[in-house]
Image 1 (cartoon, one colour):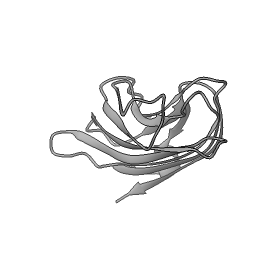
Image 2: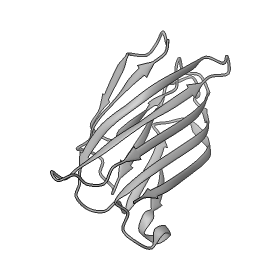
Image 3: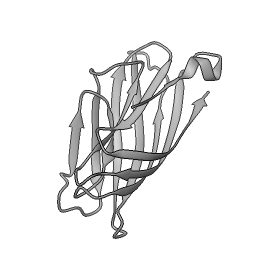
Image 4: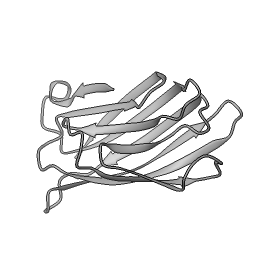
Length: 148
Protein backbone atom coordinates (compact mmCIF):
# COMPACT_ATOMS: atom_id res chain seq x y z
CA UNK A 1 0.00 0.00 0.00
CA UNK A 2 1.11 3.56 -0.64
CA UNK A 3 1.52 5.46 2.63
CA UNK A 4 1.28 9.26 2.83
CA UNK A 5 2.24 11.15 5.98
CA UNK A 6 -0.12 14.13 5.84
CA UNK A 7 1.41 16.13 8.68
CA UNK A 8 4.69 16.40 6.76
CA UNK A 9 2.97 17.53 3.59
CA UNK A 10 0.34 19.91 4.95
CA UNK A 11 2.23 21.27 7.95
CA UNK A 12 -0.93 21.19 10.06
CA UNK A 13 -3.45 18.66 11.40
CA UNK A 14 -5.92 17.39 8.79
CA UNK A 15 -9.51 17.05 9.95
CA UNK A 16 -11.31 16.15 6.70
CA UNK A 17 -9.95 14.99 3.36
CA UNK A 18 -10.89 14.18 -0.23
CA UNK A 19 -8.88 11.46 -1.97
CA UNK A 20 -8.69 10.90 -5.73
CA UNK A 21 -6.97 7.89 -7.28
CA UNK A 22 -6.78 7.04 -10.97
CA UNK A 23 -4.77 4.48 -12.88
CA UNK A 24 -4.41 0.98 -14.24
CA UNK A 25 -4.50 -2.31 -12.36
CA UNK A 26 -2.76 -5.31 -13.94
CA UNK A 27 -4.83 -7.96 -12.19
CA UNK A 28 -3.04 -11.16 -13.17
CA UNK A 29 -6.34 -12.99 -13.65
CA UNK A 30 -7.62 -12.33 -10.10
CA UNK A 31 -9.98 -9.88 -8.43
CA UNK A 32 -8.43 -7.32 -6.09
CA UNK A 33 -10.22 -4.88 -3.80
CA UNK A 34 -9.05 -1.28 -3.43
CA UNK A 35 -8.45 -0.39 0.24
CA UNK A 36 -8.05 2.89 2.11
CA UNK A 37 -6.78 3.08 5.70
CA UNK A 38 -6.47 6.01 8.13
CA UNK A 39 -3.86 6.56 10.84
CA UNK A 40 -2.53 3.00 10.57
CA UNK A 41 -5.80 1.33 11.61
CA UNK A 42 -6.07 -2.19 10.18
CA UNK A 43 -9.39 -2.97 11.89
CA UNK A 44 -12.47 -1.29 13.33
CA UNK A 45 -13.93 -0.08 10.03
CA UNK A 46 -17.59 -0.47 9.11
CA UNK A 47 -17.29 -0.30 5.35
CA UNK A 48 -19.41 -1.47 2.47
CA UNK A 49 -19.68 -0.85 -1.24
CA UNK A 50 -22.77 -1.20 -3.37
CA UNK A 51 -22.39 -2.29 -6.98
CA UNK A 52 -24.06 -0.14 -9.62
CA UNK A 53 -24.10 -1.83 -13.02
CA UNK A 54 -23.98 -5.38 -14.32
CA UNK A 55 -21.24 -7.83 -13.43
CA UNK A 56 -21.68 -11.58 -13.55
CA UNK A 57 -19.06 -12.22 -10.84
CA UNK A 58 -19.82 -9.51 -8.28
CA UNK A 59 -22.14 -9.50 -5.33
CA UNK A 60 -24.33 -6.40 -5.05
CA UNK A 61 -22.75 -5.45 -1.70
CA UNK A 62 -19.36 -6.19 -0.14
CA UNK A 63 -18.42 -5.51 3.50
CA UNK A 64 -15.07 -5.04 5.24
CA UNK A 65 -13.76 -4.27 8.72
CA UNK A 66 -10.02 -4.04 7.88
CA UNK A 67 -10.22 -0.89 5.69
CA UNK A 68 -12.54 1.38 3.77
CA UNK A 69 -13.26 -0.57 0.58
CA UNK A 70 -13.44 1.28 -2.74
CA UNK A 71 -14.65 -1.52 -5.02
CA UNK A 72 -12.68 -3.99 -7.12
CA UNK A 73 -11.96 -5.11 -10.65
CA UNK A 74 -14.33 -7.65 -12.22
CA UNK A 75 -13.80 -11.14 -13.63
CA UNK A 76 -10.06 -11.03 -12.88
CA UNK A 77 -9.56 -8.56 -15.73
CA UNK A 78 -7.05 -5.72 -15.93
CA UNK A 79 -8.87 -2.45 -15.39
CA UNK A 80 -8.70 1.32 -15.46
CA UNK A 81 -9.95 2.74 -12.16
CA UNK A 82 -11.05 6.14 -10.87
CA UNK A 83 -11.80 6.50 -7.17
CA UNK A 84 -13.17 9.59 -5.39
CA UNK A 85 -13.63 9.44 -1.59
CA UNK A 86 -14.40 12.16 0.98
CA UNK A 87 -13.83 11.60 4.68
CA UNK A 88 -15.57 13.94 7.10
CA UNK A 89 -14.26 15.71 10.12
CA UNK A 90 -14.94 14.04 13.45
CA UNK A 91 -18.56 14.05 14.55
CA UNK A 92 -19.61 14.51 18.18
CA UNK A 93 -19.53 10.74 18.79
CA UNK A 94 -15.96 10.37 17.42
CA UNK A 95 -16.98 8.93 14.04
CA UNK A 96 -15.42 9.79 10.69
CA UNK A 97 -17.80 9.12 7.80
CA UNK A 98 -16.50 8.12 4.35
CA UNK A 99 -18.54 8.53 1.17
CA UNK A 100 -17.47 8.14 -2.42
CA UNK A 101 -17.61 6.26 -5.67
CA UNK A 102 -15.31 4.16 -7.81
CA UNK A 103 -15.50 3.24 -11.49
CA UNK A 104 -13.68 0.28 -13.01
CA UNK A 105 -13.51 -0.15 -16.81
CA UNK A 106 -11.97 -3.28 -18.30
CA UNK A 107 -10.32 -3.66 -21.75
CA UNK A 108 -13.68 -4.72 -23.26
CA UNK A 109 -15.06 -1.30 -22.25
CA UNK A 110 -17.42 -2.79 -19.68
CA UNK A 111 -17.73 -0.63 -16.58
CA UNK A 112 -18.95 -1.14 -13.06
CA UNK A 113 -19.39 1.56 -10.47
CA UNK A 114 -19.34 1.17 -6.73
CA UNK A 115 -20.83 3.51 -4.13
CA UNK A 116 -18.68 3.56 -1.00
CA UNK A 117 -20.07 4.02 2.49
CA UNK A 118 -18.31 3.55 5.79
CA UNK A 119 -17.05 4.89 9.07
CA UNK A 120 -14.27 4.57 11.60
CA UNK A 121 -14.17 5.79 15.18
CA UNK A 122 -10.97 7.83 15.59
CA UNK A 123 -11.17 11.34 17.08
CA UNK A 124 -7.52 12.17 16.22
CA UNK A 125 -6.60 14.33 13.21
CA UNK A 126 -5.86 12.37 10.03
CA UNK A 127 -2.09 11.99 10.15
CA UNK A 128 -1.59 9.20 7.62
CA UNK A 129 -3.51 7.63 4.77
CA UNK A 130 -2.72 4.35 3.04
CA UNK A 131 -4.14 3.34 -0.32
CA UNK A 132 -3.65 0.22 -2.39
CA UNK A 133 -5.07 -2.93 -3.89
CA UNK A 134 -4.96 -6.37 -2.26
CA UNK A 135 -2.80 -7.60 -5.14
CA UNK A 136 -1.89 -7.02 -8.75
CA UNK A 137 0.34 -4.27 -10.09
CA UNK A 138 -0.83 -0.66 -10.05
CA UNK A 139 0.33 2.34 -12.04
CA UNK A 140 -1.40 5.66 -11.55
CA UNK A 141 -1.77 8.78 -9.48
CA UNK A 142 -3.05 9.61 -6.03
CA UNK A 143 -4.13 13.12 -5.00
CA UNK A 144 -5.65 14.46 -1.83
CA UNK A 145 -7.24 17.69 -0.77
CA UNK A 146 -7.65 18.82 2.81
CA UNK A 147 -11.15 20.10 3.51
CA UNK A 148 -11.93 22.98 5.81
